[in-house]
Image (cartoon, rainbow, N blue to C red):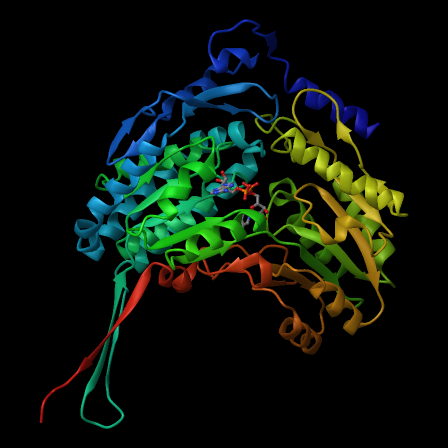
Length: 523
Ligand code: NAD
């Protein structure tokens, strides 16, 4: 019954389908066409679809474009510029040219730009949320949550700009003095993914602007519009031309490769998959370029027998279904004590089953589409593999027909240890539940991955909580809570989830170099 209802709602969401435009002249016209509402068209059109270089908006020098699609319909939303190598070089030139003036701009002024941008985003949250939902697919309420999270980085770092401190101390021999100062690291390159189109940008841009750095940002080609909207807002907030340059590109590797090889660049910060991160680390090594890598995850969600079960289920819903499971922090596997595993899985399945799937712009929708057909098919392949090896489907387990790339929220019980779904990043709305008998077994299973971004732990036993927290090999831990993201806290991983931290004072350090002056006071 519920599956049929969900199908109806998904199809209802694309009632504006008007059919393909065969023989159309431009790439955009060749895509399936869908009618946007006038408000949807207005928010898409309000954002420049060009490159933002040196404080001006311009088309790609070769005139090429990329089509941006609505993943809930597969229909085209608009075209944005596809930067040429010359455009990319011009963006870096602009960042380098603006470097000295921005580095020496008063910290309060740098902070004030961020604060004004924060206020503008607050005012425009409704429009940006719709834009985000259109290009990325997540329901409007999730877009609003991301905007709040993203915007908090601008607010936090507007406050940090005036707290860049060095130190002064007497040398141990009593004669000389030790002076350290923090200075902006210099021109930065940022590459961001599609899953959090705004927040993955502000986590880097906020501290970089506060520290006095200039930058070239390349968002994912699937979701460039939020980054362009952010550039527009920062321009309006008074950010001088050249401090932030945004280029959109079809072939990210080709476009960014020459910039990574440019000796003027001082920092590369990347958020995305571990495989791409690995290749960027190699490229960056040529210039001994300082890098931050926010990579993939495979978060364990561990529930001990003494946990508050309802609290654990609540936490599981957030850890699993935030962003439809398309989050690096998404709970990838549920390790539940064997005495409560069945009850936990049943309760989770009930909650997942009740979620409404559909186009994120519609009222009451909990789960939007996957970003594209490949991602949805990969999710289904992992489910099929688990089922073939003996897992039970407690709810979901199938794609939803129709345009758009929808997948039903899924819970798998009795998942065997060799199922791929436990070891690979799912990046979708699938919760595999497996069991453990002892604390040692739980810790070993949680750590049995090359990733180390975040782990979730549910227990009411304080001693156990600390014991396990200290043994988990991750950069972050959610203790009795399903979410760790917080602008004031250091976000980041260990092992193959990368290195570097975003958020909090640690996030600022990524954009500062320490200079030490050995002072001879004479005598
Ligand atoms: P992706 O690695 O495919 O792409 C990320 C970005 O890198 C995009 O802008 C893309 O265009 C660009 N890119 C791709 N190949 C490149 C190359 N050869 N050279 C330069 N740039 C290149 O990742 P995705 O599919 O956009 O995002 C999903 C992945 O991101 C998941 O693995 C997820 O776990 C990870 N992620 C991590 C964090 C974190 O903070 N740790 C946050 C969000 C997403």
